[in-house]
Length: 488
Image (cartoon, rainbow, N blue to C red; front, top):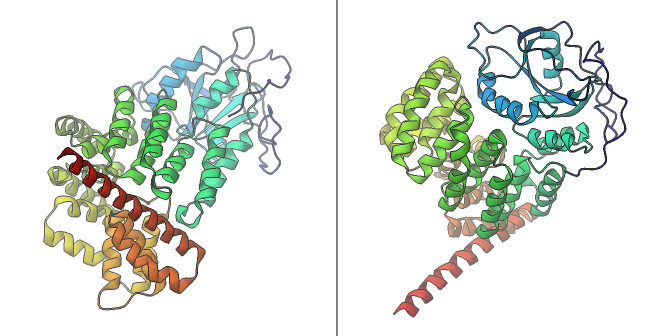
């Protein structure tokens, strides 16, 4: 994100008081100005459960506040407390203090760890959550200078503000809109994905989505693992101080690279320093578990699992994610005895939740009873071919699930193929499932008639991708053969 000269602003001589709330997010913000027509309600009447309102007056006054709206009994609050404390430690004394804004007082003085101020102001909390972002940088006038999730570049935004750079909150909102429009990544050409990743990182180099998209282009579209490893190394280095963005990047990376060890090793080196200081951040800890699981580091994984069992017992909504992380790697068979009760407990509350049923398949597929695995698959594939085709495609291409259920998507395609001939659209789906499960020669053979029949540019694009992958694989085999000949 570019850093330019800070726009001139009036001297700030008062603490933050008395702002009206008018929300109309249609006009564009000028550089160095806040989100238009969006002025945060006053915290003047807030109950300060911990600390006090930051002062903006005087030479040591704050430049802005990071307001973080949360619900007091929400697990999201617990996932954030360590990162908020880290942001307060790094930036509070430099002019950007953290303020946690709750809807109600916590039950005890131990409910919210940390040293940052905690304000109870339901109206302000509700207004901020109405922006549909995780946090907002707000200046002395109550203007929103930057908005976004804590895990999507907030640290870089704070650094830019402190360096005197201009922040345009519409850029953050625009980046989110762009990612939303591209939720089905497979539908977009490689060039468009590359342009989007470059734009996201130009606006904010701490955006993990931009790094993950750049890695996807190199690894999956261009079949260039060396370039993808360089992206992974650069991302981990750039996000090294930001635990939540780093964890988000690693989680997205794993959706693309699976159990490719060089990437898991890169992720491990990056996560080890931050995981110890983010023990309350369950998504980060589960991502760390997936990395340990993928690398087969049994002793460390078991120690982490024992601790997380206690945490998940206090946060029952995390059972499914815990089960999924346990099953995601070569240690999965050893953890089935823990993962299966966790996912079954989640299903006991919502038995018709299809995503939970899919996670249960993942657990059983990794190392459970074969008969139970087949019964679970039968439950998930007990429908017509059109539905199976659409669901398999969804699982492989939608941003929220891609990379999580590739083996299930292939099993759905195999069920779709049973006792019938696939049409060209179903062949296209089947080919992608084969490709994502490492059967690239089979994927190419499946895609050729689909591309010929459909005369569709997207089908042709995937055909070229599979052809490149097969050529690369054959070239590697040839090089290995030549090497063995030389060694003789």
